[in-house]
Amino acid sequence: MIEPVSQFVVEAAPVFAELIRRLGWVERIDRMVPVSPEDCRLSVGLRVKALLINILTDRKALYHVQRFYQRQDVELLLGPGVTVDALNDDALGRALDALDKAGVDRIFAELSLAALDDCQVPLECLHFDTTSISVYGAYDDASQLRITYGFSKDRRPDLKQFIFGLGTCRGLPVYGSIEDGNLSDKTWNAQTLAKLMELYDAERLKGAIYIADSAAVTPETLAGFRRHEVRFISKLPNTYKVCGQMIRAAIEKERAWVEVGTLSDRKGAAVYRTQSFHRELDGVTYRFIAVQSSSLDARKEKALAKRLEQERAAWQVDAAAEGKIAYACEADALRGLEAWLKSHRGYHKVTARTVAVEVPQKRPTRGRPKKDAPPPPVVTEYRNIIEIHAPEEAELEAARREMSTFVLITNLRDEQRYSNADILRMYLEQHEVEGRFRFLKSPYLVGPIYLHNDTRVRAFGCLMLLALVLYSVFEYRIRERMARETEPLILPGKRKSFRPTGLSVLEMFEGICTMEFILQGQRYRVANTHIEPQLERVLSLLDMDLSIFGVEKKTA
Image (cartoon, rainbow, N blue to C red; front, side, top):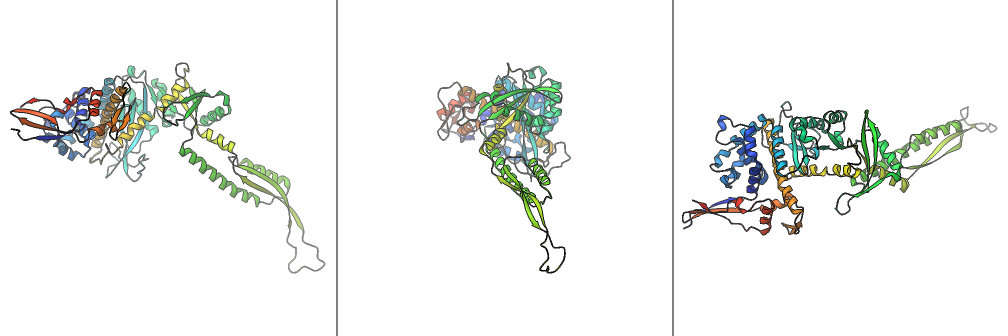
């Protein structure tokens, strides 16, 4: 006789539970965040594990997490003796308070490095960037974490926000921070450099290269790179005068370009070429690399078209105004024309000429002139006639070349060890950190933040970053193994891929349930959902099998 059945909606929860176990996160958290007397029922590490599994499988507000675990095999995920009632929102909220009190920067640093070590990835090219997370509700701007208005990368200037700062190595997060909503990227880069030296072992950072966008190039950050002897690669901002000078110098030296070719196997990928310069900036010699791309992106093409239209309209108005000016002599008119042409240098072509115009003057007396009165005097005036013509195609092509050229700055001056192509390739891999942000902002992960104070928002932000680490390890391990496979992975929708995203693989776990029943005094666990061979293949890529779902025989 079969006794009453328990059914669990497991999906991908056991996978992440197993990853957390292998990384030893619960034990590491419990060492850094001791449990308080009122929380002796369940350690902070276990409660954090419960929250991470929930975030990655069924993102809910804190007061809904307990409901989520009512459908889960709690002991399978969190260990023997753990019950659903220990996961109430008060207990989870106190875990967030404990995390924040212990220091989320230090906690994230240790846990992320544990993941990096588990994947056997050395600290090499570190990519840094920030993004904003919009929130609803009222927050005190005077709190420790200022959840306030700032530049919104979500394009929601009407909402308050906080900032996520992130550093990645081969797509694996190694640095994370939760910042004020109005913190600028320039300030963040300088602060991040200082925190890196504080949180991470200096010996381990020796082989690292700090890679970021142009916001990293400020006098303060450059001084930090020199002081801490940190190697870096960044894009030189256009606001630096030397940037335009080097772009023009590179374009003029057409034969000096070194062809790099494409750096991607994507169809239609851009073709690059480079020139290298060694110049001083604020008294320090750096290596500058002018990079020209074969493709002008849509934003720059649109900007060029807008600039041409604005120039044409402005010049036509100015030309009409100049044409109304009457000069007393030809010399004055020529000087006026020279000044006009000097102040109107751009893309459009100009033709101009100075003409003499006979202008009758008014009669010296009023009334009808006498029949024998002499005609009114005639004065010769000089006017400039200016016509605006469309730019020549050669000029437009030169403008496109200049707009598709940018300059990299680095203190890696050894061109034998690091070629221009190497520097460019490392910089273009900046997309890996941007890809992590896309996951953080995806509907799969992001939901309303039902937290009432800034400390819990900061702690929960740390959990979101830790969830990103787990997701990244999940994706990294599958991709690394697939790189050695000869058959592609078959994803939902019969899509084939040797390099699948973590999100596409997680779709394969949707709807998986297990059932537990007792038969003749023995307890059995079975999967009551059909397990596709491709799903078992995914588990094998992760060095796992169906046992993570608990589908083995147990003694009642």
